[in-house]
Length: 361
Image (cartoon, rainbow, N blue to C red; front, side, top):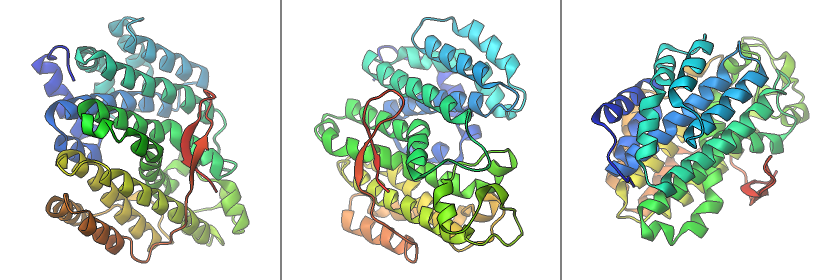
């Protein structure tokens, strides 16, 4: 997957910073085959930089769009990475220390990107372009009232996670001809795979997002339950809030069902790719289970799964990674008691006007 080997310093930095900016991906990416893991880790860090730009509260929307555009120009070789790094580093005031270091070391990250084969770079560049075009659109309109409806939540999830599912699928296909032969089966499920993980994060991070003036939940779902998203408060009665959350847990669970189907389409001999997918699914199911059992939760920390639960997921997947029946059994066991609902895959049209795959209400 590489035309030339990136420098040892660039690879070491990527491996080290990954563990400081992502808990989940720091666990799952090392399970991938060596070169594929290096490519996926690199793509994740680039997406994290785009997300860090979007999350900077002091940057006006127009400036964020400029930085996103310039990041894509850097990836395409149309702009100098060092000049861009100086500009963006001085603009980030509220990012964590690890996020700031990641941005400051962007030249090393880009060195790894530039070493990959053309098809790999094109796949990663496409993902970042769509992500950087879509995120600012939603950031300009987001408020405590939430998104208008479930369709808009689907579109938002596509830009921040669904497109990543598409990117991963194409990278897996570039890694393996056997996987490539199943691309037509995998791709309709790829967006659902990404959305399942994103929806889990959105639900458990609701109160933290709200404290920053943001809500990504669909207000029509809450309005039908008799709840006004703009007025809910932690540690106070919020009629209709929990029933509406349960409806969204059910949607997320069906996306996780689709994600399981996606994972089991990966050939059994590709145990590393299977573990990468299945660990993330297991963590998400247990997070939703904890959230569903905690209707009065007031922070994501309260529904964060324990290290013991993480070990249970990794061990279960390790011993059953080639056994689809056992994996189905573990999934049913972990999701027992969670609400569920059917989700039909259908094309959704994002900003670029090209159909992608998501769900119907």
